[in-house]
Length: 155
Ligand SMILES: *[C@@H]1O[C@H](CO)[C@@H](O)[C@H](O)[C@H]1NC(C)=O
Ligand SMILES: *[C@@H]1O[C@H](CO)[C@@H](O)[C@H](O)[C@H]1NC(C)=O
Image (cartoon, rainbow, N blue to C red; front, side, top):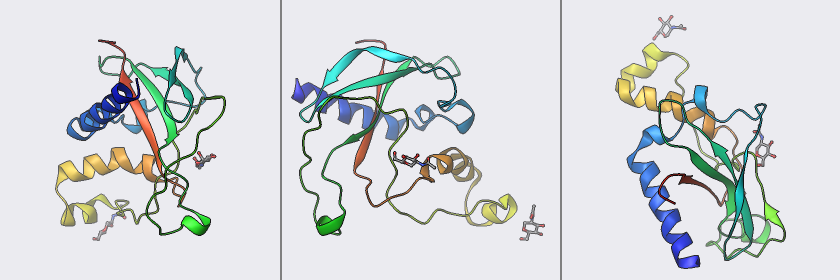
């Protein structure tokens, strides 16, 4: 079970890296104010149970079950700051996160002035950054979390 979960996680991650269209644009990203639809299944991981949110991306893409903010290591804060990652601890109950966990601290490129931005990057990169930057605003040192996106077809 764990083995297949891990394989699934790596497949999904590879999928997201190789198919950036799967990262929703800000227009179609899940709106926290809209009605949330929870998956009927609970998935068990090595550290605890989680239930995903169901989303139907725009543009005819297949539906996705999204598990936000699953910790994959202990929070690198306090005495663990700047140390190699330490294995996570089990959580109790079922994780039902409605938004992604923060991303790690990073300096984001400034694309406010598109004319200036296009002097230092190609159009495609600018378009990609416009989609990505809204997802990278919430930053914290406590950032060792995965967001797992599972295609709903082919289960
Ligand atoms: C940032 O992430 C934390 C932890 O998930 C969450 O509680 C907080 O609401 C988020 N803040 C913003 C501005 O999205
Ligand atoms: C963007 O920067 C250029 C200078 O590189 C300036 O001429 C232009 O007015 C700026 N555009 C906006 C919308 O601020």
